[in-house]
Image (cartoon, rainbow, N blue to C red; front, side, top):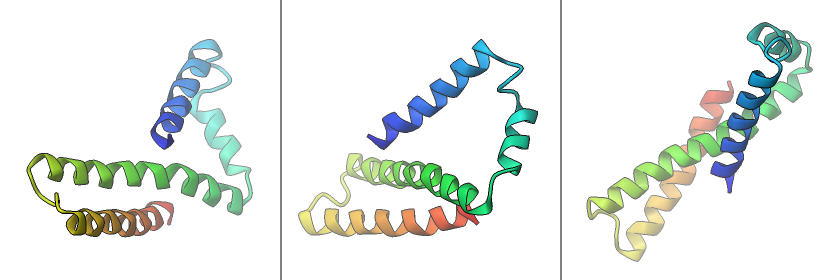
Length: 96
């Protein structure tokens, strides 16, 4: 679900740039974001960073399954908790 949302944002922005390149160019976007309050900026960063980092770490978890690691139920849960912890830490790192 979050991967679909990230894709929708990417494609939506890309199509908007194709339709109205003068409105959605980098200078206008930077100017718009600079005028926002800090809490809105940080909230937006968290909303974008959390699914991105989750998909990154969970992708590594799935790759480890492909190599035959963490296949037992206990190891799978442990890897899942590690993904959640790594997601939290890397989200904070990206937001700050």
